[in-house]
Amino acid sequence: MIKAVLFDMDGVLVDTEWFYNRRRVAYLETKGFTFDEIPDLSGSNEKAIWEYFVPDDEVRREELRQGYAAYQVLHPVPYGELLNRDAAPVMRELHRRGVKCAIASSSYRDLIDELVEVADIANVLDFTISGHECSAFKPDPEIYERAMGALGVGPDEALVIEDSPLGIEAGRRSGARVLALRPHEGVVLDQSGADRIIDSLADILDEL
Image 1 (cartoon, rainbow, N blue to C red):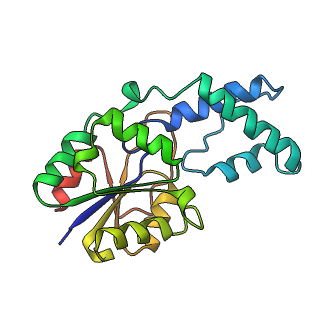
Image 2: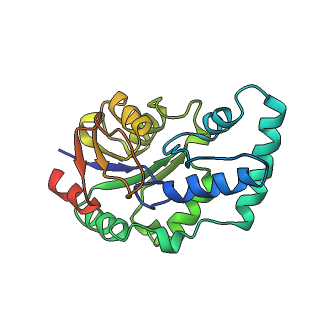
């Protein structure tokens, strides 16, 4: 019996992956980079992303990372526009049925908190955790194992909702059943590792 649903954030609760990919490229173009196409780094963590763009120069990589942090302040995520409109209704229904809800995201804590406020879901969330609060990022299962521990449920009682291959792997390695939300048009993700691919968060309710 499913007693808890653990949600990834980016690409699941808010359709940010395409926005992140485009914002990152726009910034790098101001630094002299050129692109024939926009690299799709959906589901990657910050360390891996900057190593992808600057693999051999740690100093330059850190300069770009810090510059991008300032760029993000000037170009914030429009959460209100990108919010998955099914997120709040589905979480409220889960809460009504006595199923616990958590967010387990590789994003920074302040971004998770901002999403929770914009979506108005604080009153139906039982736990949130950032990958930056763990010793390793996805695909390491730690983030989901810690979430399950905090909620007092076992892997056989938890359902993980993901979109990216790394997140799906993390969910599977935690022992939980994993549903993958089909991505936004223009975002290509290998979701073959999921137990099931869903078109809407409302499909979660069929699993209970």
